[in-house]
Length: 97
Image (cartoon, rainbow, N blue to C red; front, side, top):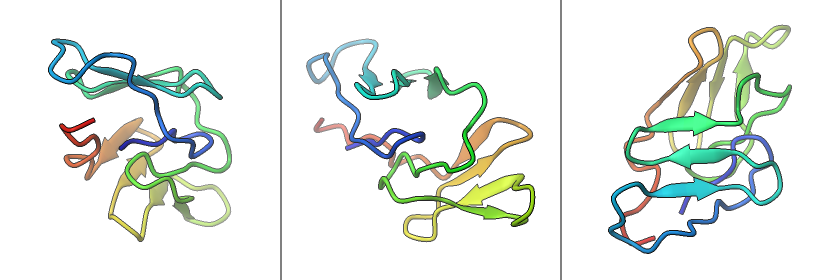
């Protein structure tokens, strides 16, 4: 199960399991996650509040005044705003979805 980093909604996977290019998308914000390439589309500049793509909870930003890094204290996912990179997402999408 995967979640939208903008709104926290569960991502939908229109492709059947085992397809060569599995994609997951948010029907609310239009964000797309390409599982094979481990890339996000439609997530160019994150909003003030970011949600964890692994569990859907709100991420905590540090430093508090102008966050450069966002952390999920539930599952350890980290987002580096300056590099636009996600860390700790190896379990992001279960292969059974």
